[in-house]
Image 1 (cartoon, rainbow, N blue to C red):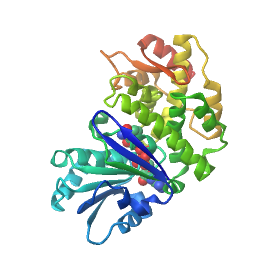
Image 2: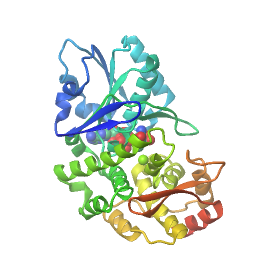
Image 3: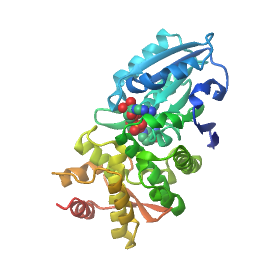
Image 4: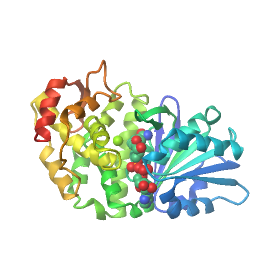
Length: 355
Ligand code: NAD
Ligand code: MG
């Protein structure tokens, strides 16, 4: 098992990563909690809820709340129902919430913990590859019908307990989704890490040790950035590499048609293209393109309305005065946030989607 300590100006917590550690969950908690509420989704509940429940001694009051699987659960209704559960089960400021699942459960249960009684402790128990990203860094949120993650907070967990064994039940599409963020962590940090990820043949059959190594490195990259810039005033924006087009594409195609990570993968190719135009440099765009193809990332999109896509990019949280700010890659490990004007962007988008 490996542990990484995340230390920001305001708090400190450990990320533990290893095999089968879900069975020993109480040993990773900073104290004994008398009342615990496990929040999970309908798919993860069938797989891992019993393991986590059984890890606690019978004298502790352990409740469970199960939300439907998928992005739909990052809603005000799911949020409000969970708050009602907290009240009815008499959780107080000494209680604990356990977020058992992917980024959806992590964001939702984390936001419940952030706001119930003005904040109670919670732990992240991620079960997706993508959640190596979402469980670290303390951002929690639910969606508004007008946009993703518009209602949220910076509220770090008291610990992250990441059992890599759970990742072996992930569907293929979710492996692709999570690995796009692993690749992103490579691109924004160092070439050796990026190369080591791309040198692995298929991401669908990685050994436990390689997977753990990639996730550990990804978490370290994220931790280092979050430690320096917790509230995203500067370098934390680099973590949004690939997300400007990614978010727009996700919304344009309709959530569920393509996963977040699959959209970010296309977004990273696009951001590299823009970088090449803006800086006149060359990037590992072909290498990444080949790897994405090999791993069956969706790359062909019919009937994309490019004008609407550019308009969607403007709703990005990084936008300033309606101007799109993009995270661009000078070279691996070196990024810059630049304003890119609509006209240039539309031209590159049209070319990118071969309109
Ligand atoms: P998710 O939580 O919806 O999980 C994906 C699917 O996999 C779900 O259907 C889930 O039931 C299933 N699943 C989860 N674990 C499984 C397992 N071990 N075996 C089999 N099936 C399993 O999605 P996600 O990709 O983990 O997270 C996406 C969310 O994360 C988005 O809402 C995004 O906004 C958020 N996010 C947040 C941050 C942050 O910093 N807070 C960062 C990135 C993404
Ligand atoms: Mg992301």
